[in-house]
Amino acid sequence: MGGENWGQGSSREHAAISPMYLGVKAILARSFARIHESNLVNFGIPPLRFKDPSDQKKIRQGDRLVIEDLRSSIDNGKEILVRNETKGETYRMTHALSKRQIEMLLIGGLGKYIQKKIKGE
Image 1 (tube, rainbow, N blue to C red):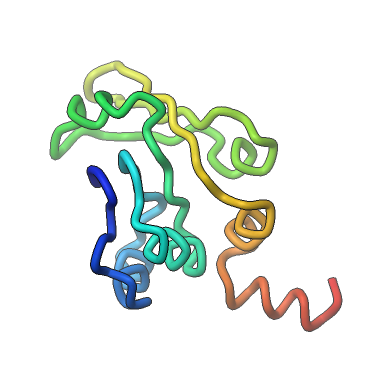
Image 2: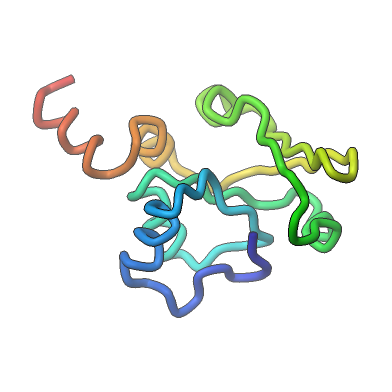
């Protein structure tokens, strides 16, 4: 989870590779640095933005967050809901992804996206 302009100064791919290897399923932030946001998508990590930026301040270390139907919500353009099971709250999220980025993200990142294109699928 991050604040404003998450990933600023982290334009190298390694800033997105590390969370991928750590098993991070999504990054929640108020906003993203442009290049870092693209790199997250390249490695299959959804960059999600709080619809209400003040919600970010409600989440504390140790809170258990569950993202409901992330894949289908992104694929179908629906609102993304994050449930804080610790506090019994739900946060509304959005994204700023293009159609191509959504396709890339849903297939698992840039590598798998390129493989699909090479195969002509």
